[in-house]
Length: 113
Image (cartoon, rainbow, N blue to C red):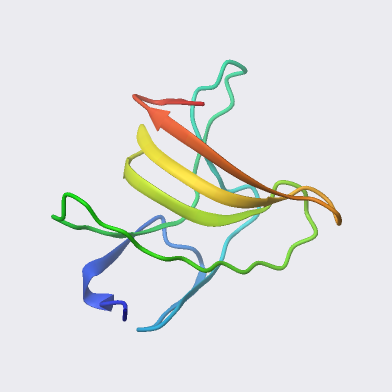
């Protein structure tokens, strides 16, 4: 499926990105993330998000991500984003040369878990 570039919008666009019909590439700035009000009070709501709206009750999509990093906690993934207080992310996270982790975070009413 091709990306209809007229139907997508940025929430906090990165400084460097390319949007084409068959791919999206972005380079994010250090220390960007989505994370809200944990028990240890960490908050970060500054990651770039490229959104596409749908009226479909049920939908699916396929995402292929690639990232080249050597910095612990760097991530590449997807987010279903309503607003700063309500979203879901799933990502590959770099931990070290031997381990990459698949993780997810759900944020509901401003609290991440």
